[in-house]
Image (cartoon, rainbow over all chains, first blue to last red; front, side):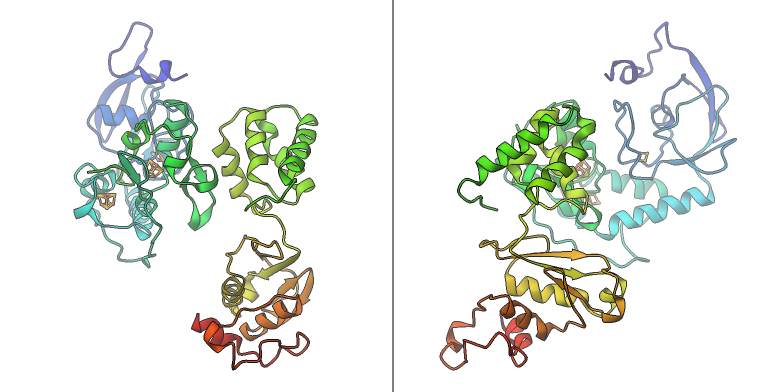
Length: 228
Length: 193
Ligand code: SF4
Ligand code: SF4
Ligand code: FES
């Protein structure tokens, strides 16, 4: 299903039309129809993002961090859902975008078990990257911190799941369903108790999870993490 | 929740009947789950598994839907159903404290059913008599202005045996008259646990 979309990585085959777009005053040649987020990232322009996977046909657009301004659009749009078009003019930063990202980011941290020093993702974590790129603090200052004491599931042989570090991006669920094709995990409950879980919320080792590790590789933070 | 004898067979035959009435299509998932709950009163795990197999989606996806919507319950309704209102007025007047008291007394959490299936506990959002807040529906009868101290009275009235702390058993009058539950020190008891 993803073959057409997923393989456009730069090498412009014959059947691929290239278009010129402008991001932050620089021009780039990118394959027509490619989603803006990936076109920008490939050309070295960083846009914060947590939930998108390039192979996904229909992005869930759930993290609300990848906003950009596009000329001709009244409001900021999520770059992970926006296909590029000839002549598109994009800004990755503006007052309102910075504000939206800052607020969204702090909300994500507000129930996050922040413990970077001891976290398996320390150094490769997307939250850290967003903080670095956008000059944001990995700290909750304007909001009330919600203690999240959900227990860690360390039943699998090689990895563990810490719901208190999960940003509910859904990447693990997508790869479980579409790459590993197992269907062991999903998003359950809702509101503050939403989390990634197995059928009946059993430990992973007691489910039909094959422990292939695809989900661990997909996790942008330290929620699904390889055991030391 | 453990199934009782013969229950599994009953679930299987009901779900099979329901499934016959719908296309085996994942778009039919919600109506199928509604029909199953309509017949069984809740969504047993076994039923969710059968539905998943029938519409050919992972079991966890059925579970995901079943836990998302408020209308679905995953535990059988108890013989006595306790619904604690968490609407705005009840919330403001301490509905959550009432919920806590029931949870502690029944030793279950919101949304669950006691092992003996005598009691189930759930939250509802506004039953339409905010002036009486906080409100609890006990088998669909309104209990008005409920205080934590009233919780034991309600449960005793429904025939629940409240276990006292073992050390106190001798001194305290264990067999309270259910009709006279007013002076039971429910609050202290609860806190002492
Ligand atoms: S997931 Fe990222 S932000 Fe959270 S503790 Fe780990 S390294 Fe820090
Ligand atoms: S475990 Fe990781 S990949 Fe899965 S939803 Fe949470 S943050 Fe995303
Ligand atoms: S990456 Fe676009 S909304 Fe998450």
